[in-house]
Amino acid sequence: SPILMWFRRDLRLSDHPALSAASKSGRPVIPIFILDPLARSLGAAPKFRLGLGVDRLANRLKAQGSRLILRSGDARDVIEQLIKETGAGTVYWSRLYDPDSVARDTGIKATLKARGIEAQSYGGHLMFEPWTVQTKTDGYYKVFTPFWKAVKQREVESPLPAPSRLAAPDVWPDSEALSDWHLGVAMNRAADILRGHARVGEDAALARLGQFIEESVGRYAERRDIPGVDGTSGLSENLSLGEISPHRCWHAGLRARHEGKPGAETFLKELVWREFAYHLMHHTPRILTANWREEWEAFPWETDPGHPHAVAWKQARTGIEFVDAAMREMYVTGRMHNRGRMIVASFLTKHLMCHWKTGMAWFQDCLTDWDPASNAMGWQWAAGSGPDASPYFRVFNPATQLDKFDRDRSYVRRWIAEGQGDPPEDALAYFDAIPRRWALSHDDGYPSPIVALDDGRKLALAAYQSRGF
Ligand code: FAD
Image (cartoon, rainbow, N blue to C red):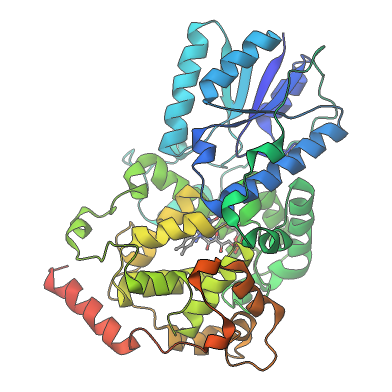
């Protein structure tokens, strides 16, 4: 009987343990993708990007003589319906780790098992399953460096080749049309701009990894902090949707280290930050919804996402150049340089004292590389409420950060049109991408700072100290 191969955030054919197992069985394989309530609830940019990825996967499968069957609805109902239609006796998928996916998948597994249907989940999204990394006292890691030390010598499986052939069923079930799902509808005017910045699909991700290792990893350690240069891999959007496996990136990094490329070790470490985020989410899922350090619940955050300060931050009109440049980069490209993420998050949670959840939710709506674990860890790190967090009293000063990391001002010039006689295309694209209701134009002139940096810093520190933190 056929195997249903349920694709979720694993939109690739190579180094895909579940797909390889399905192919090896010699049985017909029916690849499926389900637009279920969880997929439907994604933010605007990640949902749009998901649609691009699903389309690319469907084309790749077609080129192999297979298909991707699209269905929408509750995942359990859809799977049961497909089992009825196709006589499938087995369902495979790659494991996910966020609590909502875990709850859904556990429920489906139990239902299928009760009906005598085999349901098998595989690894592939992570190199180190969160429950396999344990401290000497059988606990989980709360600090990155010991986590890194615990995993860095581990053997990571070598990438598997894509299956050369997937046996087709005698009759294919019907598929819905991707275009009917309107996954980009919430993007409004930004969709086309974002599409131009996305690097979609497995082939593009593999090519990028090759190029990054060849040209950039050697100088990664010193250039990864400079947002004005293309010094990082840019693979997060692909890793987020599983268009490339972390294993493949790891092995490429290991080879580069072996060849003596100096930045390779730092690259390997960054890949492990992603694993660490998943480790934390698995062991403390509340990192997604509440202050990881409970004492932070008492902090006087501004919680209204519609507060004028939060709105100015979202609209990239704070008058603080580094902050606005980074926010605009995100709006136009769906991505933001890591240095920018740290600065805008520190500014929102410290200078403006807005709750990190306001920032996390906005990122969740705007990032094409949105990842539940990395986003939550990043925000709680920046706010000071997370494990192994940046201490609250360490307030990034966006002005001195600019002098240090954008010395030639190429980053702010690329993203802030106001004040430039002949602004670059990307800077103007921001005004084309934003919703019309924001009623902003580059002729408005660049705003004055919404807070004096020194005042914002002092207020935040006073609030911090008055609570006895
Ligand atoms: P590279 O520098 O090339 O690094 C290689 C890979 O390592 C990345 O693709 C990523 O998978 C992983 N990585 C690197 N840095 C981190 C990190 N700090 N935490 C976790 N993984 C890391 N990353 C996301 O993928 N999705 C998010 O939603 C996300 N939200 C963030 C929010 C905040 C407030 C902060 C401070 C960071 C966030 N990050 C997030 C982490 C990081 O900024 C991005 O992973 C990185 O900028 C992606 O660029 P790159 O692929 O060129 O990274």
